[in-house]
Amino acid sequence: MHARKQTKDDNGTAVSASSPEAPEGTRAVLDGNEINRALTRIAHEVLERTKGGQDVTLLGIPSRGAPLARRLARRIERVEELDVPTGSLDITMYRDDLRMAPARALGRTEIPAGGLDDRVVVLVDDVLFSGRTVRAALDALGDLGRPRAVQLAVLVDRGHRELPIRADYVGKNLPTSLRESVTVQLEETDGHDAVLLGPARASSTGTLRAGSRSLPETTEGDA
Amino acid sequence: MRHLLSAGDLDRDEATLILDTAAELAQVGDRAVKKLPTLRGRTVVNLFYEDSTRTRTSFELAAKRLSADVINFSAKGSSVSKGESLKDTALTLQAMGADGVVIRHSASGAAHRLAGWVDGSVLNAGDGTHEHPTQALLDAFTMRSRLGRLEGLRVAVVGDILHSRVARSNVLLLTTLGAHVTLVAPPTLLPVSVGTWPCEVSYDLDEVLPKTDVVMMLRVQAERMRDSFFPSVREYSRNYGLDGERLERMPSDAIVMHPGPMVRGMEISAEVADSPRCTVTEQVANGVSLRMAVLYLLLGGS
Image 1: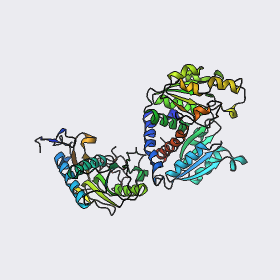
Image 2 (image 1 turned 180 degrees about the vertical axis):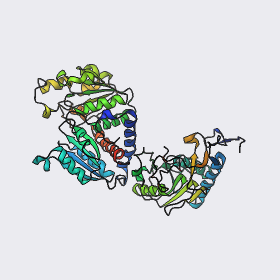
Image 3 (image 1 turned 135 degrees about the vertical axis):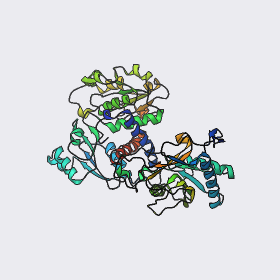
Image 4 (image 1 turned 30 degrees about the vertical axis):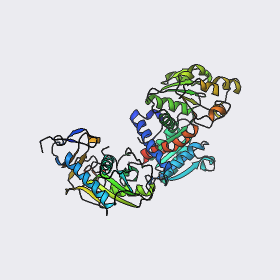
């Protein structure tokens, strides 16, 4: 794992494949190459499940779902020469834990020009945990249009669901304890690709339960 | 941030956060369902002691788009006309469980007093001749979306500065955000303390216009005037009104703003008011998004 191999990222620029040293106490569970492979597989699975992907619209959930959605779109384009409408969907205003923390800054919502009516919307996020972010995203979608179907793609499924929600496409199933944290780092937002597993970060408010998505265990809420 | 009482209370980061949030919330107006569930179960009281259509409806629409319950409370037709004091009205609202109170009052400092009496957030929607922070914020938002920046922008505020809470809030906010403000008015319509404001002052509109990116025309507030401040409307209009000829002398991408209501033929000619460079209706549309942003940031969190 320590050998640094040069590879090409989606933009064709050479990047270092292995992540820099994982911070103290954390362990890299996916490196850049493994993330790329997982995304390539998900791209093929999306095309297979949607029978060619003609009606697919990809919506990434900020902050890290949005770049993941764009990467997925580029991969689908490479495989099928298909231009997939891609956007982002901020769910902050639909969260169920807004009252448990000070008001948060909003992420970007960009709905592709064609709208969402009768599309197969694939939601893209980095980590699937309690399922509350996805619940919020489903509520937001309902106010934006009426997709024919909604599917979910995640890079990491770490378990501990609190709602009846499952992912259709999973990069890696990662069994975790509630005392652990999963951090996804991406070239676009953090300078390099890695999925890190570490101890829970100290929570500033002791009242946060495992249920709320503002939990420090996920990468959400960092932005 | 718990209350919004003065534009001067906002630092640069807070003001930028409000403008960025408003930019995101502007999209809600174009959606199939023009509503967000964010303030469900929260109550916003519009407490208006002065007449207002624009600001009150703007706040009402903003709160409703965030799913808050809205109670409109105007001085006419309420217990206020029977002699109830502001404090007793505030305590009544408090007992009813208002999470946010939007107040407009003819006395400067009313919003500040109210903030000491109620537990909820207080939003100043204009207090006397003191401040009108959401107007300044929506003006800054409009400038930023039209011209792409605020840093280094040259803004002229022209007209009845003395009675204008819009002018004071704009000077404070725009200075915080890096713009340069010049106040233009006859000496009689400038407050005594204007020398202490962080802006420049000029009596000559024609000299200021060629080096101005944004000109903000203010209405002469005759209802607040107990003395004679200028010889005649015609003379005022000739010296401080914006007509097509004066607009020509401004940079070609300069914009004309007005907080409304406009008096055509007085501070602004019909030709200028109807020109595409005049942002009056845009300001009204932006006002809803901006007030949504403020309500969200004040009431949305814990």
